[in-house]
Image (cartoon, rainbow, N blue to C red; front, side, top):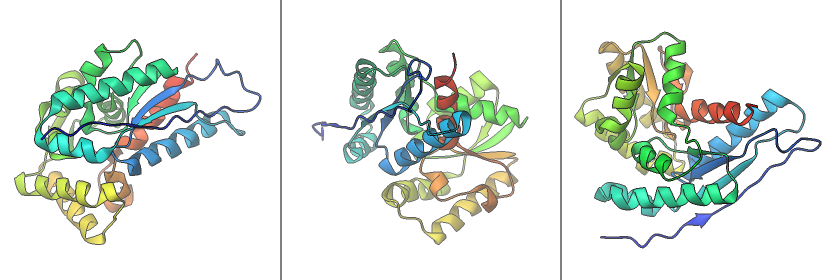
Length: 254
């Protein structure tokens, strides 16, 4: 079943007083997948800019927000070609609106990152690259990966970590992958945080530790809503925070 695609476009621009607007680059965000995590991106971007520049400085952003119900249906149908067209359209719209770089506010939709990058004249800041740099900063060699089944099972994310960054990746077993996936779509994407689900995630992370994981990637931008560093005994890599903070550092480069 093909779902007619309509977008909800929300453009937000933030300008600081007494500030040379040419100094800070504009971050183009492809969001809404889900809006719960996109909200976190916006918060982190602005907190990071304030931390770096002080005063009333805030991030210059343009947000293109999609209707996630349509995205979810196409994902579970395996209609990645139409999803690629949607992502390219979003990225090109952000470029036309004046963005200087593109940030895809979700791990799963980096499946078509190469196609999106090839369709625009702006840099796309890849979430797996940002996460890999954080892992290597801690000198870890083997990490667990949590995320949607698409992210855990398909090659676009794992292979980038393995081939480009030489990081060994372990994933949960079949049953645990199902549990992680269902909690993401049925709870976290709806802003529903449950203690029972937290316990399941902690159990799964502990299983990955037994397989030799030295850290764990929260490879879905909703998972940090559920799991915090104090919940586990190994370093966690909150991809939402890592990605958003990298975008700010890129935006502030001369």
